[in-house]
Image 1 (cartoon, rainbow, N blue to C red):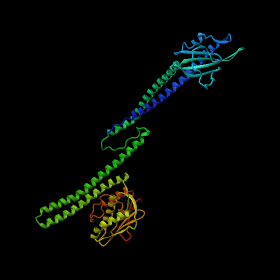
Image 2 (image 1 turned 30 degrees about the vertical axis):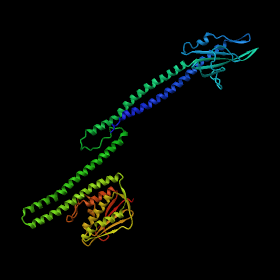
Image 3 (image 1 turned 120 degrees about the horizontal axis):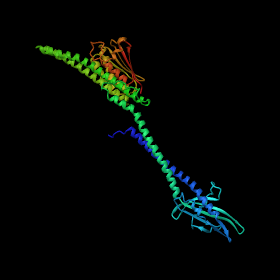
Image 4 (image 1 turned 90 degrees about the vertical axis):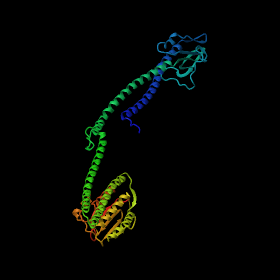
Length: 461
């Protein structure tokens, strides 16, 4: 299992990656901006040198000559780390001074609009080096000569690259310092923001195992309130579950203690007797008591199954079922019991009725309703199992019924209004739990003739 990553480190890592990308983008932008600034600054110097050289071009004996002063090339002496090249062509593009083969302007090179001169700037290669070149045209108008002389001055780009790199490095240094500061601020800010969570964790760890009080909301940020509320809601449900389990265990212990004590007393009484008839009677009574205890244990297990089934329904485990088919199968299974008790069991379910539910729980509901109706119906009576649309189940009997003032209590666990009738007092309690799990409504009504009618309304599938 992988160790969970730290929220603080994850946030810092993501922020650091973002800052690195921004620094690289800013560094590249600063470099190209530096190149543009360097070109602007050094182009002015190139043009000044070209103009100085152009001032020394003159006509002598029908030809052009160039007197290149040292100051024309000395302009770069204090701020250039590269080399300087120049070329002077006459009106016929013949070299009259300077370096041969200095690259001419590429075709289509526009004239600069930044300076009042017939000049063009361009980049080229010369003697294996990158150079920046200016081509300046000087008009020549003499009686025997008329045209344009050209002066080219080139400089290697070491100074420009150095200036651009310096600007980029300075930008990266400033951004790096800013990034480190930002990361430190985020570290302290996140640490401060997580401090309430640390206090919350400490408060939870210091609690006793049975302390299920809600967590306080006043010591956490507003954004953490939903989390604390969810924890409190979960704790509340857990507390209610523990309380139900504790109450159930107490009720079950109480219900089991009495029949077990009676069974033990009956067996001890039988053991004191030497009459075989007494032994036989004791065994019969013990067998009946064992049957009641077995029925009670089965009902308790049914309650446990109801809780598991309810959890399965809440997690999306419900199935599409035909309630009429379930009632038909249950009626056939309960028919022998009804016949043995002398009760007529009838089924009224003409068409399929579909709903979404858990089949085991629905069979348990049908079984408990029918068994409860058979237990309270005298011999010769009738029990009707009825299924109608959209999704309604009814079980009607001819028994004594239940008074209105007691109809709410019969769904309580271990409640028995007639102690003469065998049972554990859990049947209708189980039915009520199953109805809650299926979001169904259960209600008790008077029967059409006599007795009781139990109606369960499901949500149709």
